[in-house]
Length: 332
Image (cartoon, rainbow, N blue to C red; front, top):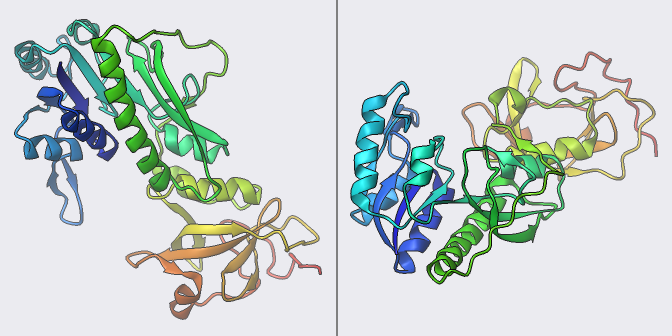
C-alpha cells in the first residue's frame, strides 16, 4: 500500500517511522515549512521532515493547500506532487494545515487522522494539554476518517489509556505517540482487507482543545491547589507555568498537593513554609508544595538547590496577590 504522510512534530514522526518499519511505501511527505528556532533563531526542519530525509523520501512544504488561497503556487505544486505519488491513502498526524476537499477526495481510501484524544472530547490543536489541565482520568488515540470539519470525521479505531497523577504533557505525549503509531499500522492493515468499520462521532460530549497560548502560563493562586497542579503538569514542556516574585518571573515545573496544610483564610499566593522537599504556597483552596523551579536563563532545579541562589521566606507573596505577608496563618 502506498501512503502519503502529512505531519510536523515529534508525535507525527513516531507514526511515520512505524509505517516505514511495517513495510508501507511512503512516496511523499507533507510537513510545515522550516521555522526559526533556538537561541540563534535559525531555520529548523520539523521532526517529520528530518525523519523523511533520513529515509530518502520526497518532502513537500506548502504554506497552504488552498488552490484559491493566499499561496496558490504552493498549493498547485503540492497538488502535482500528490497526484504523482499515486497513493492509496493519506495519513495525517498533527500536520498543522487544514486539508481542503480536493485533498480529502484525492486518495482512493481517503485521509486517515491520528488524533490524541477520545473523540469527540478534545477536538482541536492541544488535546493532550487540555486533558491533563481538565483533570481527565483517561485519554487515548482515535483513528478517524477525515472530513471537512475540525476533527469531526467518523471514528475507525479507538484505544484508551489512564492518565497518571504524575503525568505531564511530555510524558503523556510519548505514550500516545507510541500508541498512535501502532494503531495507524493496524488501521491500514484493516483497510487493505476491507475490515474497518466507520462509526459516526456522538453529538454529546464535544469539547475543543484550543491552542495553548503563552499568556496562559501565569499561575492564578486563587484557583484550587488541584487545578493549579493540573495546569503545571499540562504546560510541561510548553509554555511552562510562571509566577512573579520580587519583580522577577520564575517558572514552576513540578509540585505536590500539600494535604497537611490548613489555614484560616483565603489569602492565596503566600508562602506558608519552606523545607527540604519544597516551598508550600497557599492557594484558593488548599496548598501546593513547589518542588522544581527555574529562573530566567537558568536550569530547572529542585527546590533546595533553587533556594541556594534565590532568597525566599515564609510570608513572601507570589504572583499578583496583594494580601499582607502574615495574613495567611497555618494552623496545626
